[in-house]
Image 1 (cartoon, rainbow, N blue to C red):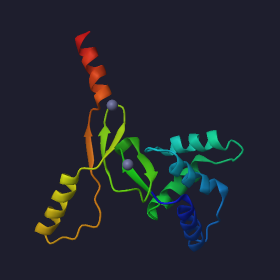
Image 2: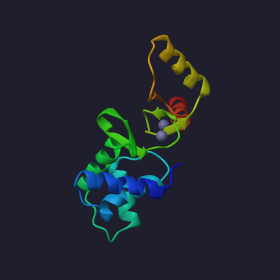
Image 3: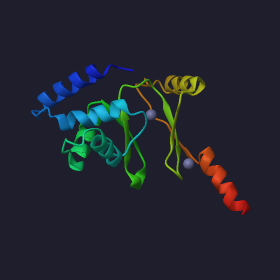
Image 4: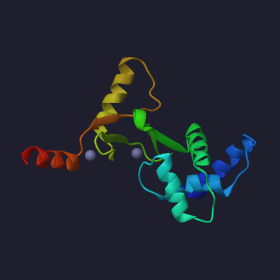
Length: 154
Ligand SMILES: [Zn+2]
Ligand SMILES: [Zn+2]
């Protein structure tokens, strides 16, 4: 995992480049992503910031715009949930893929060496240099399956 200070310097550099001001509000978005394990909607990030720094007035629009900027610059990554919108996580994490429960929205991270190797092989077959990939496996998580079973049997 990269150091927070590295990401912070990157954010400062990017804002300067775009002639935007470095503000504590913008920094809090990066900080919330960095210090919380998981994948969050902009609304959840907004709540995390409010809980951590109630004295800071951070509008939801600032959260949306900052997340978009962070993603554009690789400091954040998102998983799209169609109509339900995007969930964000900090960028530059070690590579991993995602299992997504379509019922409760739970996201499980995994790495499977065989899948990684197979993708390399597919790249080679098409003389294609793979630089990145995202894999989203959709389904129903263990807990949801259990509650579904209970409902069926009652
Ligand atoms: Zn579930
Ligand atoms: Zn993830």
